[in-house]
Amino acid sequence: MSKEYLPGSVFVSPSEAFVETPSIKKVMDRAISYLKANIPVHLTGPTGTGKSTLAMHLAYKLKQPVMLLFGDEEFGTSDLVGDKMGYRKSKLVDNFIHSVMKTEEDVSHRWVDNRLTTACKEGFTLIYDEFNRSRPEANNALLSVLEEGILTIPPSEEEGGYIKVHPNFRIIFTSNPYEYSGVHKTQDALLDRMVSIHLDYFDEMTERAIVETRTGVTAEDAMKIVGILRDFRLMTSSTQAISIRAGIIIGKILKQRNMRIERANLLLADICADALISGRHTSDAREKMRRVVIELIHKHLQDEPVAHLADYDEQETEHRLEALI
Image 1 (tube, rainbow, N blue to C red):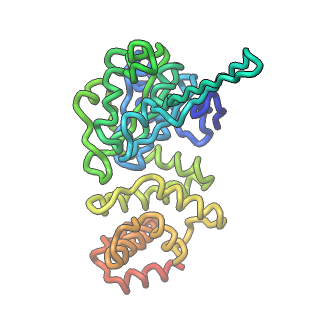
Image 2: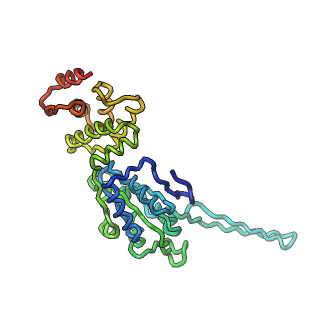
Image 3: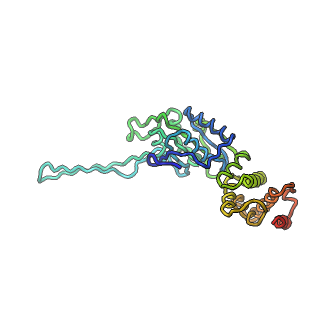
């Protein structure tokens, strides 16, 4: 929940679905210490590791309005700082002499602050989500902000061509790893001006708590969903990243359909496969991964250990599943 403060800014309220386990609290405590010391925080890690959610919760802890900014390949410096947008027109009519009318018009560009400038002026918390999707040169305006506390803007718009950054201004960055598609390598000078906290997938206890809290399934079902997800993540780590979002999707659908993970069934296999398998895989790869999902469902619904999927052909795997129904 949030409420609007100025155009483009919000006050962030605590999320009821935010889960603060001991491992998350450790990260929160460190990040808050840096931010209170006016040190920019950079949360980096694979997709689905909770970077944006954590950034929003950190902003809530700071108790001040928040500006949101999302990295974009098409960004230029003006998209952060501001630009001349449209025109300002003024008209003066002089009718001092009854029979003579004198008219003067003045037309000029109208300057509009963008979000970085507004946050710097007003002392807001700026969350720059996936900032490395923007080209490095677009982010150059941040260098003087983070080092000298000064934002440079066109001289005609502010006396001296700069503004001093408000003492309450704080900034939280998030980014995906450099090897991800659509991201740029961040210049060292910018990285040197922030503290980077590297996030990985949550521990098992945290993932169970997230699925249970976000979906409403029982603790037992959350344990089984997360068990399937974590095993699938290990078995497919070289081909795709598996985030906790997949577990949330599975839990939400099971809750919606009032299903429990008590017995394997084809619908459960389909739901898990849809949530876990990325759409970028070929049909053959998807079929092989679906067999992995089925085997993992079998494993987590049985007390005794089962052999690896490689020990079974496709037909036998399906028979094993049907035997559980």
